[in-house]
Image (cartoon, rainbow, N blue to C red; front, side, top):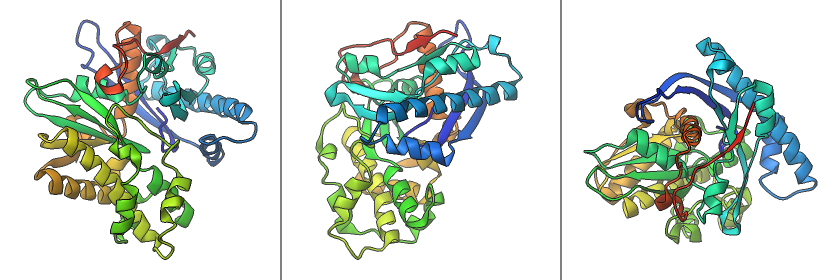
Length: 367
């Protein structure tokens, strides 16, 4: 998995024993391959239209496939396993456009080259079929969250805070179906702002944000975006929330200190998550966070405070409490989706994406 944060590739090696429920997953290894600056820059530039972008996308896709192959080799070396013991590689690819309102989403990565480089079957393109069936194509992880994190006794929310944030509302056994949707920015605006002002890729532990003060008027303005008023199913990405969008909102705050803006962006992510949880999961007492945002101490505290102000006491912790590191949840989700494809079982939840029905997700590139 390589997500909206554009920092690198997260990979897991997972075993799905025959004859038992697919939620019974054993992780055999995990690896991370960072993107070099030139690839990260190329992928960032592909988030918007530009000169010769078809050619540039193809080159970036080839480079991604090589990084994916490096991650696979590292995982096999860790586990002491051969390619013959692997059924398939599930690969999401890098999202460079997500426009379900126009009937398409685009994840680049050249899965054919990945199959050639590794000698292993590759399953890719998980989102297109859901969009073809009238869905948003995102988020897809709620189906996995339901399989591995749902509890018969406790109504839970799993909040994935990557570049974009999304939630999975997991009712207890006596309640209604699972819902999930993108809630708005996760780390994407905070990462862009600290890169612009301090030249860093991210705000470690939210330390810079913690040094600032939330600008209440700016926070209120950010929350006026129409996306937040729309009802699910809904999804979003860098197509909406990007540096130019933020700059337009900051025009009325020319004297704002950069650290105060960072604090406000953290509060913005926390507030929009808390608003979504309060609106669609008001009975929840536990929120489990995965993705890079789980490591941002300031953001986690802001989320805890925001939820308390809306719902009272809600326990906020990372998915470590449920046995899976927040760094591995999304990669494991796409291993699970690839396994669903191999069994020819549906991978989407129509109640989440808005698709006409359950669909088998993915496309196979044989080795």
